[in-house]
Image (cartoon, rainbow over all chains, first blue to last red; front, side, top):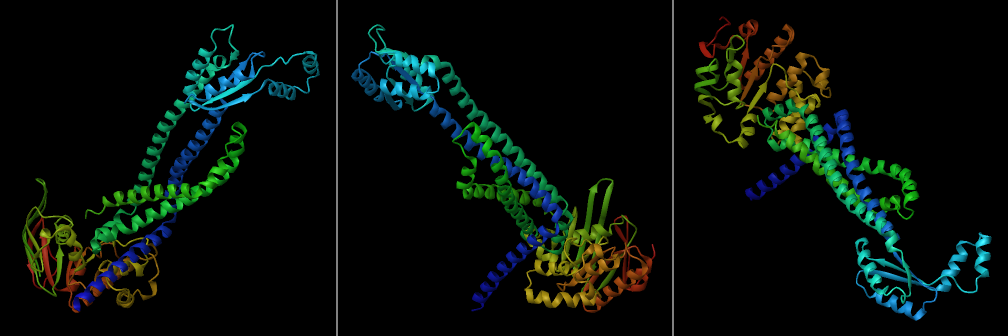
Length: 318
Length: 226
């Protein structure tokens, strides 16, 4: 019986101690307002950096998908090519594993599109009318799954283009676009690599700055930690409130960072849209709000409470 | 109750703080520890609180060698000893009430006990009307009274005071000493390190005189003379 009572007393005591440590942390956070505020500001900068990296990665990725989507190979056929030959070529192209999609535009459709595009140009319209035969041939537009695969698709088409005098193909624009396609694929690769390196450096630097700020905040309390120990506080009881404060720094920083991001994104969104019309950062922010907030919250709390714990340990050695 | 057994503390060859000190103090004694600055008074008290370890010899509190205690048991020892410092060492962002209550929280006392005892002790040191002040808002004498309240709140067997009146004016000094006297009469052992002649003479109890790390005199009912 006594044993049961004793255990219950201990459980109560642990609960009371946790409550006391938490209360001490909250009170100290509030009373050291200026220190708390400056620590939060630094952590906000860290989290803002991390958040910006998340957002720029999102913009870069959807912009890349967008740009990649614009790249294709167009095969122009001679205007006397038989439609069934063109369709046969289209079928064999679509069987290549690297090819994502093939779009066929007939000679008539090409002419119609041409008229639509140039309907304001009277001279051009008139000269088209004067021609008896359709001057345009059929076109197929080919999209590969990856930019690097256009080369092999083009060489397949090239093999179909021989001998030249019998070929139904007029021209393949890959060879005109080759330089641009190659350069784009290089830019995309290096953007990915540089982005990764820059992110890592920024994250490491901002974590170190946060760590130092919190260390300074606790340095100002080092004598009090000593007093607590001399009055008989255990290490956990003396360091607990500082860890709680650290958690609060992390929480408020994440919250403030998310709030700051909103006007920034609203301001920057039209600028991104003017370059990549289909990329909306605001939509990304709203759709992924919970995940991004959770990420910043986790990072903030982990960095701050861990920094507090390490910093306070130095002064516990009495 | 307390025994220093051939205790030496040597920082370096030229800096010897304590040199083979033997001292025993029994229950309910009031011991004044006197000597010039650097005589070794503070070092002696630091060894008793296990803030520092002796180079030679043993320090015993209630028959336990303080320095053989594992680190995690040190808080238990310190809760049995109330400490008062010359520079008060209050926690600056806690109120008077919270500073005193903190010592009870640390010892794991129940909230109800804390609510009853803190006002009682603050009344004892005549600070009942300043419970919600912060240390910065108090005079030196008042701060020291808070520190004493904190030292005695857990009803320790021993109160150790290191130059408690060093920063105080004569009137405050008198008040502080009379509080110590009161606590001693209630049954608590007191070790008071000081170099204030007036203080020692007014107490009129056991005086231990230190010089250059050694005890040079130990009078049952002495006065201050070096």
